[in-house]
Amino acid sequence: MDFQIPYDMGKQFLHVDMVNIAGVINARVDEYVPEETAEELIQNALENPIDSPRLRDLAVGKNKIVIITSDHTRSVPSIITLPILLNEIRTGNPEADITILIATGGHRATTVEEQKHMFGERIVTNEKIAINNADNPDDFEYMGKLPSGADFYLNKIAAHCDLLISEGFVEPHFFAGFSGGRKSILPGVCNNTTISQNHSYMALSSPYATAGVVENNPVHKDMVFAARQAKLQFILNVTLNSEKHVTAAFAGDMERAHEKAIEFVRSISQCDPIVSDIVVTSNGGYPLDQNLYQGPKAIATAELCCRDGGVIIMCCGCRDGFGGENFQKLMQMGTPEEVDKYLASIPPENTIPQQWCVQKFIHAQLNYKVILVTENLSREDVEKANMLLAHTPNEALEMAYEMLGHDAKVTVIPDGVAVLIN
Image 1 (cartoon, one colour):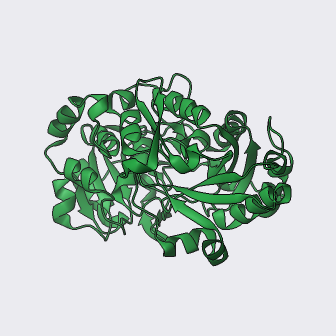
Image 2 (cartoon, rainbow, N blue to C red; image 1 turned 90 degrees about the vertical axis):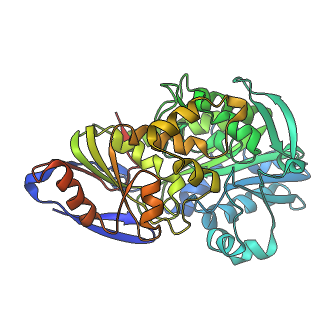
Image 3 (cartoon, rainbow, N blue to C red; image 1 turned 120 degrees about the vertical axis):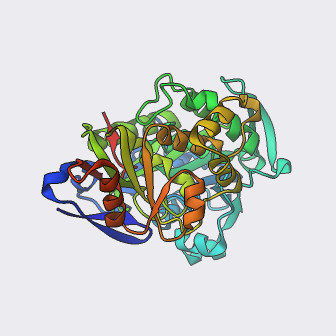
């Protein structure tokens, strides 16, 4: 069988002999085809908000309004959603002072060119845009303690507005349960202190801090609390298929609308595991695979389908390299056992920014061999990070056969981020 594996802005091709195929796992995101266009779905959601007045009504009498949106690492179709959101607000309040706040979390700043790609030139030219900078303490206001005991620092632009809303998209998330909703606040517009404590080794070690789980999830619990404290009053969240096209839209109350989106995502993403010797997967291509830092999202899915001692093949464009200095340093500081021991010794209040993705990578490396398929990292850097390098999925598969035998069984999960393993 021949497969197309999402990679950067295109595809890489994989051939697996029929005798080796254990199975293929695809979320049903492409099977659901809405009758309405993306614009119609979004407009209908705004006209029929869940447990909330219409946004245009909420905007009446508000002076400073902030729209939190995602950064360059996410596939939110802001070029479609933002004009509709802005029109809805200005219908209720034509004189509103609106700021679009880019929720970078702890990521680097979104460039102007990336903003134009995400929002369109008209919005970049005509609207007020701010970017969260988690490294600048002067940009944040202390909001108290989170349920975990973490200190909550919120971007002052979000803290000092009359109406706070957000847009995003919902998919399974490897330790927050699902993306979207409350995540626009934490980690989106928090500083590194808050993000790091929320993403501590202890929090991520909880059995509930995993994909598809929100109940009893300590990471999710902190995020919801932070969103309430920030007075996030209205959200617009969408779901996407493999081509990043909108399949559904949910608007209204931060918790209720997000819960409805989660129900929908479960219905099209949940799949049974197919356990085998080798698992081939990806982060779904650009923008999520633009660096290695995001890689654990798909690897966490692959782990659920790989036998102990098996091989995980991860296809990741990495056009932006490792994706962070702390991440690279920690990934390359020693063996998986040494790195895990070091991370486990760090108390939550001293959590190092970006260590959480290292923790999830190491969890896989302690149990499986990981082959990274990329053309944008050197062999030396990949091997220092305790992985093997291949330039194509077929090359990686041959390497895996050499390790496990040519009769090894293979599970293919083309987009490991979109799949929620039962």
